[in-house]
Amino acid sequence: MVRRQSFFIVGALLTILGSSMFFSVAWSLFYGEGDLTPLLQSIAVTLGFGLIMMISFRSKVKKELSMHDGFAVVTMGWVAMAIFSALPFYFSGLLSYTNSFFEAMSGLTTTGASILGHSNTLKIEDMPHGLLFWRSFTHFIGGMGIIVFSIAILPMLGMAGVQLFRAEVAGPVADKLTPRVKQTAKLLWGIYVGFVLLETLILRIEGLTWFDALCHSFATMATGGFSTNTASIG
Image (cartoon, helix red, strand yellow):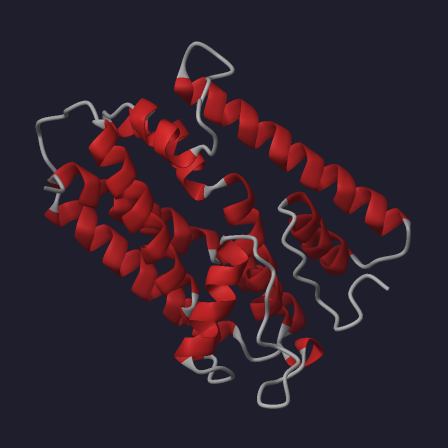
């Protein structure tokens, strides 16, 4: 049986996911291509569901997460994130929800497969920059894992994330780099963000725009491959 605590954490994940969409809003405002409304609608829906879940399943009794809870949160969390990550594409009216879900799932899992460029869909260049950034940003989220990020903030919610870390990290043995799993999560994310920023700077020096450099850094570090152009970095 899945405990209330697990649903509460999934709600927290959706809240973080919805908040992360504001980065795409910034690019939408910068380029002014008409994708602001679908992004704001997606933020409202995602944050709304996340907050409702957190309020509905909040418990005064804080219990240590079990291994069963860890796998439940990781499973429900990734499925929920794919469902809500598809909303910006769907609300824009450019893609069906099926195609939107495929694109979001491919981005979050860093698979890199895309429905864009097919004769029945639009080209990558035809998509507004705000949505293009969100498409690439799903690589950034999936590359390290938003769940690993949440482990760093779980102590603020009165929960420990050891079991969540073990369920999320791939491999037969999930060793911690530091004595505390919170410190491990922060260290991993610090290294990850550092490499993304370093590559962005290098690509910008080599001639790409800041937008293209950042999006391609997301794709490279996550080994996903989403590009902002059909010809990729070429």
